[in-house]
Length: 387
Ligand SMILES: Cc1ncc(COP(=O)(O)O)c(C=O)c1O
Image (cartoon, rainbow, N blue to C red; front, side):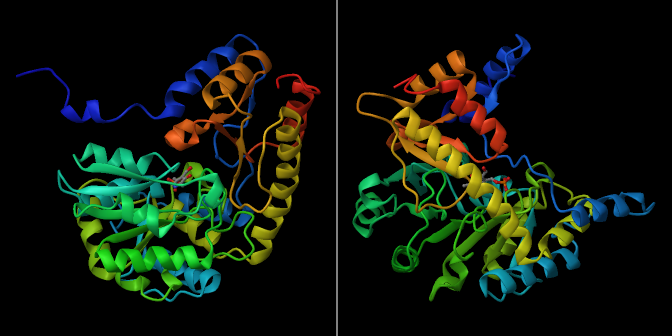
């Protein structure tokens, strides 16, 4: 038997942070205090009731076995209630919701449910890298559609038409958009739904930032025509500060949810009961929970804007989500700037090209660091130090 690895190794790279964090750890091992503004992993704790629900559940003797592949009925009911309360979308908790261990795994499961080798997916450039990686692992082609600063990082129907081929099965979209923070106007959102219906493709909307610095949380499933063509990924990672718990959900058409569950049920054996109880408590948080988080994030964002200004970078204020997306001055590239800041100032940011070629001259700064750390970063760069 050959010892060679599967061909799909050639199709993908190790995840950027898996590689880069090794470099960061080396600096830390050498005694440097690195300021982490790279990853969007919330530093703040979940609501106390969430942790209490997990702990109380974990004390029970009879809850440590395998769990249902489609989650506890009470968890699906809490997810349906959340969709009703937050987005005004009514979902059938039995058939239109599938709890996930994080939305990242959901991308793989839904890709397995829909894609054959030779099919194609359309992904935003810049955009979340896992959409393309999952497709490539399955032998599907990846067709980027370009977003640009000039268009406010929102797709145009012309760009979609230019990218589309008859092989396309899935079109990915994501608002608030990561990494740029574009909110996605009502017209853009409807255009995407209409495009997917017209081309008879699956529109996957990835919605993990729906609560972060938005005016009003929104779901694509509320749009006219969406119920026939949209699958929506959602997540408690950012909205409930539960990134490490791995809790997400997939919502939409019952027959599509069933197809994804068919894949998923062959790959895991349910989510720990205690995590599900904690998730239920998280989904029941009042609006004030999101408002208090957003007050903190807004303060941090102000400080990151000051950092960008000091660096001579450009940014937009009318953005949402967990990051500041900054454009570099003419002639600079994100990867060089990020390496220089890491080595010289021990400040860790993400270069925009991680999210696609259109991000090459941008950097992404995360709001997941205490205000004091951001102010320390500002202090480290000093006036005009790295322009
Ligand atoms: C756009 C986007 N989608 C999905 C995810 C994955 O979230 P989860 O923690 O639910 O897997 C992230 C995480 O950073 C993200 O930025």
